[in-house]
Length: 232
Image (cartoon, rainbow, N blue to C red; front, side, top):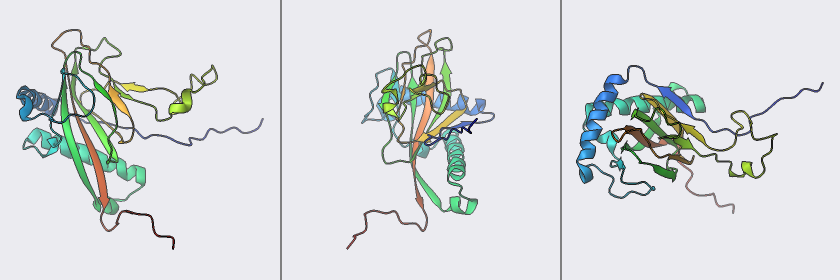
């Protein structure tokens, strides 16, 4: 029999991080974010772009700069995880990573019953992350409050039959819904389209709180290519 091998020609890296002993930090963040959200426009994103409804509160995009010890601790943990992922994916040693400088934007969502967030990606950044503070009250609903990644290979459903509709990961088709757990961080390329399905807890007091951020990098000593060289 001839030799058969399956090559992964293209793949999208999703980095899963589960922080140890996150309960105390999440409790502090939950309390703080509910207090901030209760103040309405004071801490809100005043120029929303992505489709959402009134059941979702979105903060301003400078969260990691706020003077709050719990937020600062989460920021440091998220950035450390991001640098580790970038290092492994690019095979950078510690000296190279030390020359890599990050700029970021960050915010939180408080989502109540019926809240959702439309499909989008994050231009002008290379990496994004979503951290789960809590998701309460919808444990029996398999479709509620799912962070859903949309396949970038839009043409892979051009024709589907029994030889292609059950392909194993990473070759499967369609979207990838994930129910985040408290203390879980997902990192993904910023170009990847994603959305959050409607949060539908059994009772009106259900709650979903997440923190999200985008990051872009500059390598010290390496100037970006801003224009194509003149061939003449």
